[in-house]
Amino acid sequence: MFSLTELLSASTHPGYSRPCGFPALLLTAFLFCRIIKTVVKTFKYFFGVRFEVKGLENFEVEGPAIIVSNHQSILDMMGLMEVLPDDCVQVGKKELMYAGTVGLIIYLGGVIFINRKSTTSAKMVMAEVAKTMAADKVKVWVYPEGTRNCTGDLLPFKKGAFHLAVQAQVPVIPVVYSSFTTFYNPKKNLFTSGKIKVEVLPAIETKGLTSGDVSDLTDRCFRTMRETLFRLSGCPSEAKDSS
Ligand SMILES: CCCCCCCCCCCCCC(=O)SCCNC(=O)CCNC(=O)[C@H](O)C(C)(C)COP(=O)(O)OP(=O)(O)OC[C@H]1O[C@@H](n2cnc3c(N)ncnc32)[C@H](O)[C@@H]1OP(=O)(O)O
Ligand SMILES: CCCCCCCC/C=C\CCCCCCCC(=O)OC[C@@H](O)COP(=O)(O)O
Image (cartoon, rainbow, N blue to C red):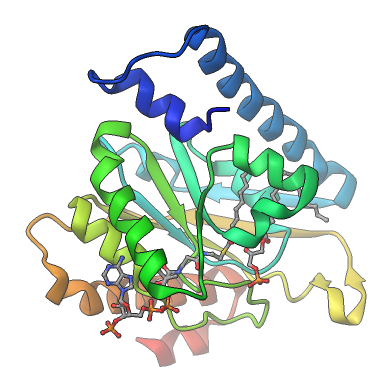
């Protein structure tokens, strides 16, 4: 079985020997992703969630990139499908792979699985991704908070996404979703209709940066995304505090 990542890579890598029936497999993978996107995009009508998206043109960078965004809940999967570029795979925790049908869907969708409990093995996977990004010509979507967080603020960022960007020398594109707290809180059984504002921010270049610059890059991204989160969620005073 071939994941989307392998198929995308196979389509561009000169040394790759193509499996029998390759074009059919590639077409199937693209069709599969299209179907998942189309289906998940209809969920918003059932749940009464509206999306207001700005800055989609910022995805149009040449070549691969790392996309980083805030992660509040399962609802993000609807938000993800609203804006997900066609040439993009996600980084996810390996436990998701064993989640039955959902696991199969995301495996076929090309998700790169990492073991969050082992920094060494996660770093090895990320280093491999950095090496193959250029050949694969794919964008990689990472949730730098590393876990779901529905507090209305950001958790401190993990550094993996930024190491990946620096190692591959590709830009970082931040994406921010406004806070769901006013209309969605599973602990309080609150789920009413609401609007989610999404903003794709301008790419942050990493050309010439080295591993010594990763902390600074992480901080810059964090501050920009936090300000944007508060602005989109209508908390201007907190946005001012963070700057
Ligand atoms: C259409 C398609 C259909 C398909 C369906 C699609 C739906 C898919 C939905 C999927 C949804 C999925 C949603 C989900 O599943 S979200 C959960 C899974 N995702 C993540 O966890 C991603 C974010 N995490 C990271 O990037 C972490 O950094 C990792 C896990 C890598 C390590 O975490 P850790 O906890 O250890 O913390 P740390 O970051 O403080 O790092 C510790 C130290 O290591 C250094 N370091 C870190 N990395 C690197 C590196 N690469 N090279 C060299 N060094 C590196 C780092 O500088 C630091 O050192 P120092 O600076 O303090 O000295
Ligand atoms: C009720 C709303 C419906 C939302 C739409 C769901 C559509 C699902 C269809 C296909 C895509 C399947 C992707 C499901 C992936 C679940 C991602 C997720 O949220 O994983 C949790 C992980 O990040 C962090 O885990 P922890 O917070 O550390 O534990």
